[in-house]
Figure 1 (tube, rainbow, N blue to C red):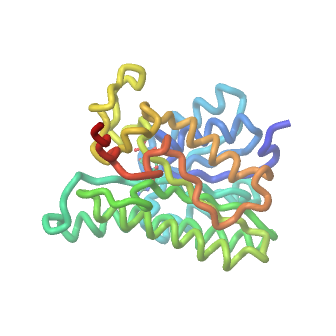
Figure 2 (figure 1 turned 30 degrees about the horizontal axis):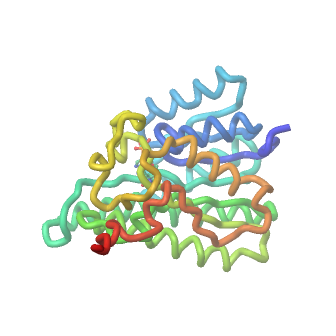
Figure 3 (figure 1 turned 45 degrees about the vertical axis):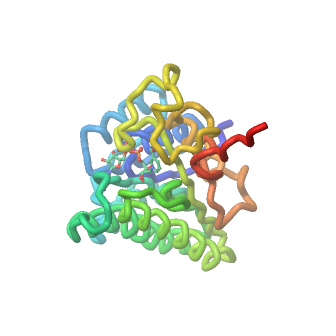
Length: 265
Ligand SMILES: NC(=O)c1ccc[n+]([C@@H]2O[C@H](COP(=O)([O-])OP(=O)(O)OC[C@H]3O[C@@H](n4cnc5c(N)ncnc54)[C@H](O)[C@@H]3O)[C@@H](O)[C@H]2O)c1
């Protein structure tokens, strides 16, 4: 029996990367998966892969930054399956590397709206449904950028730090209502968003971005490695875990970027 047998899971940004890997894993573990994304092609492709493997899934088109669309998305899940056990607010955008003084307000607002407001709206309307049915699980995708400062990513970092705090607040607010809320901080995962395309097997230390700790794992991560953490947080394996920040970054955010110079003699 799968770890999510009989559960209904909604995953945003499931048309690509971490969201798709999680959708495939959740379906393999027995969940009925609602694949939500604002790019229909990727979303339909994820559904197709799940169905070909014998799982159950459907696609819902959504822009997670728009309240009416998020409400419609939650209602679509309830209409299709009658309940909503797991919501993985994972959709996100990174934007270009631009220093704060040069970042337009438009770019700032767009990143905050998708990443932070998207997680808020997805949680708000999911919690309303979960309160009626007596419980549920929420997982939000934050980032190592929400834990350490990454120059050139002010809006992205602020949005992800905001998601971490939002997660903690919601975990406390609904701990006595059988709703667990946790977040994941991925870092250096090979997806279109991270623009990491090099073959991890051939990478040398100098290929890593300057913020990478030189002693961190000398490779990038696979979306499946984040999906396995999401599965842990979605399943009863984490039944006493709420308000936590699960870091999945090969050690990238664990310390300083450079080793101290060696002593002479
Ligand atoms: N890849 C990494 O190294 C990394 C590191 C830290 C955090 N993350 C986070 O992981 C999450 C998933 O990213 P990924 O790396 O899999 O990237 P990805 O680009 O492969 O997937 C993101 C998905 O989100 C969808 N999306 C974007 N804006 C949307 C919106 N407004 N409404 C609905 N869907 C939308 C995209 O269409 C895409 O399918 C993001 O929140 C990202 O910030 C990724």
